[in-house]
Image (cartoon, rainbow, N blue to C red; front, side, top):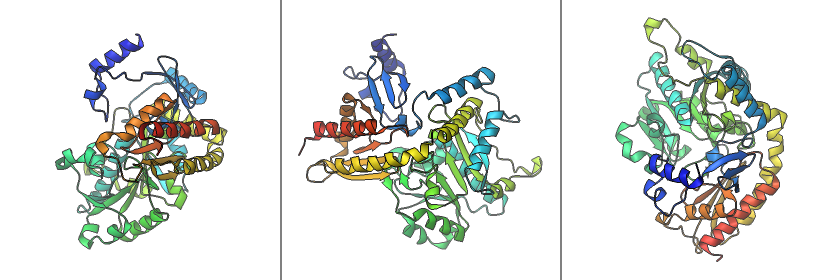
Length: 432
């Protein structure tokens, strides 16, 4: 099919996520059709190359088509592409679970439950937390606490936790019971009966993603862990975005030496190649579900592709790349370079706050007087479209530009990405 035939077929048959399809299907809109990925670059049907400035929606870690991961997937596909995980198991799933558990201190997070994506990884944690309390004689602990501006996915339970109205308000009547707080002070101010109704509290550690790339105060995670311990509430960490090196360590919780009761992983778990998620938890939680079948303690939850051998083989290969290429060690100077480049970008007239956490950043776009643009004008989206003309692909959160490249970006590519944003901002907003 030609590029034009592909575009027309897309408009005739597809429904894209988070997309106003009237605009997408309009006669004047020509969707960008990607056909290839190589390292930090994506290639369209014309052969034009673009830097992947948001890691293909925050998933890609080591670059596209990394040969070690590709070969691992190919070898596994030739051997066993998929088999049921219900009553059966497979070697890649076993080996990956062993590797994931070994990334944490012995005796802490010891059990791994596989699913498909970040939303389901959170969903698993919620159901485990509620059922744990039922099984241990505390059925009243069925509520969750979550934070304003949070995003934890779009399945029913995960969406219940969200603090972004556009994603959740229409389905509020279908939500799990949730108490939403702005910060630790509001959490500590909750009345005792509310605290005693909580099964767990969920947070994106260090930085909220879809809420606008908001950074939490230093030490919050440690304080939250202590609050949970005092009040016998599970701490559930959503590291779907922040995991696998994004903050400079393998996991964001390691920045404050915090071990959660549940850890949700996805996106970068497979290096950005295959749909795969994992929920890690403790032996204490696991043991509460043990018993005779007739006791009905079993966790009756699962997906057809749980423990998929291809996804697990890709994830194992990704962890091997971390070691072989010393990814985290080599990331430190890149984080420093990003900080210098963003400090310079922050002096642009139409750039407001710039927030960086490790190799992730949010850049607020404002009017010349510092006031926000009306969100209906889609200024952030227009800037990202302009940046595409200068060889950079990324996606905004309204008028917050996101820069979250693969960890393999080099210094030239990082400078090029920030330069493309600067040029695009000036083209859309003017230079003063």
